[in-house]
Image (tube, rainbow, N blue to C red; front, side, top):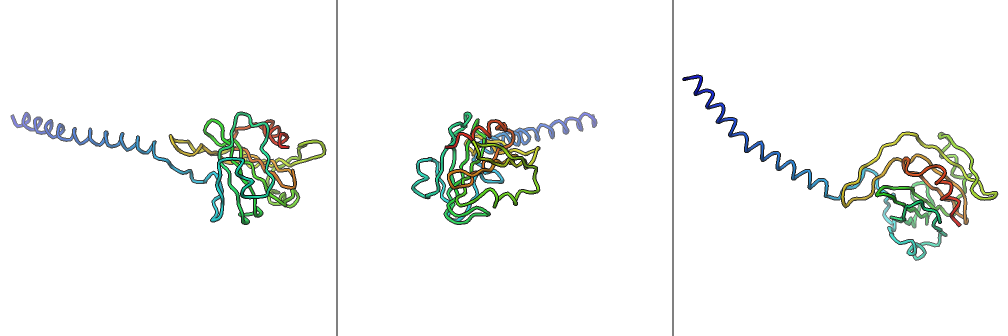
Length: 204
């Protein structure tokens, strides 16, 4: 009888914990749903943030904020212009009035295109001497340099209603055009080297 009473008490105790366990599961499920739908920011923002940076979403608005000549590539390979940053003051190693543009494809950063006024390839190249590089033909006599920054990369995963996914920059193509230095950076492996060159050559 004592053994029976002990078993009965154990069963009642187990049944008492069941509602608590069920409640924790429900709370955990709801919390996960909330987490997946709350906008979050990746560790590294899409654009460099500075106190006077001007953030735009429309290409035609650039001319109202800077005289830096900016031309969109004709070949975008299914990507679209997502975000623009104009830097009235010097930002990191960029001159004043630099323009940065983020192109997105399939909810992920495709490339970043930076236009740096009054800057030459020769003046910037020493910053990247530690990386493998190769000269490339852009158009006619116009030459550029392709810098290979890394082969492996980490990526963020987009959640609903958040900024696009991002991977580490793997390659950068630098060349001079229209009195500026144009820098096109590839995100992970989202664009091939051939597409990168075609995009650069389609900038008029």
